[in-house]
Image (cartoon, rainbow, N blue to C red; front, side, top):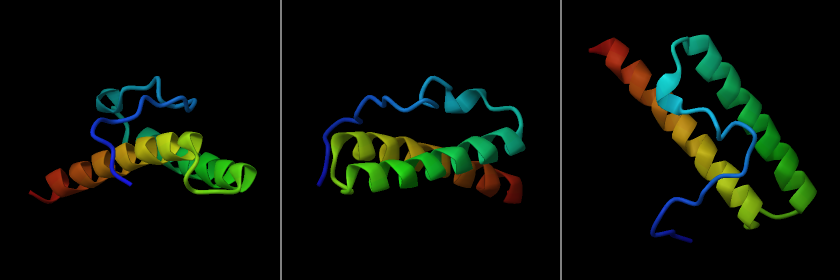
Length: 76
């Protein structure tokens, strides 16, 4: 399923702007916490396709991409 625009997230970590992270540890911790919340939400919802799960999954994707970009920038 494709979306033409990102869904606005309702997850608890969405208020944090990813670009504002100064500490790698903080970004990693928040990413891991969001991953755990996503697993819990999938179990609660019983499906991967609910709107809440999709929103949180997109937010987690953003965190992961940001971490990958940081790692890549360290290598260059």
